[in-house]
Image 1 (tube, rainbow, N blue to C red):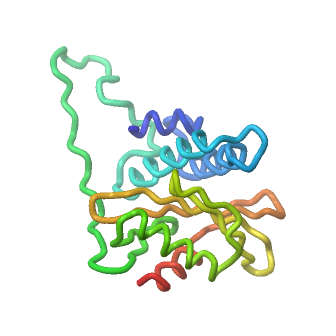
Image 2: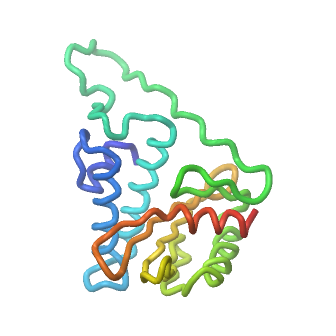
Image 3: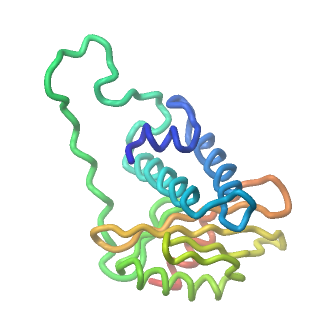
Length: 192
């Protein structure tokens, strides 16, 4: 999935910034959650993939919110084979353990099945695990920062150097998206 397809999946325009992407993802993932009526695992997986694509593009400095057009969309381009820029290299893998990248992404030096087991065990230590789907690498932990009940959604994706873990956190008591960074940092320390 490329950046433009990811934006289409998340129903955001090319010119929309990162805040709009995050808000759209959270709104759509809530509706697509398999525990909700009408929600499906397939839809949740597709939304998670789109969010991960845009998150990586943002981290690597790609034009996530600048209104950039896909290759070949510009006017006056000469006919001929399409030239694509090579994809940016992935972030360097952690030598061992875990490395936090940004506020919502963790890199683990472990294959996905092992990373899933480690994270699930750590999830039980930081809150109450309320949903697990190993087939698509997703689980939810109910946490209570400052006494407020929140949902911490954890998604895993295998990479050549290990596993990339993406976090999203929302309040279950009010319409608010919160930064998952404190929990991502805590999990990184547990696994490091």
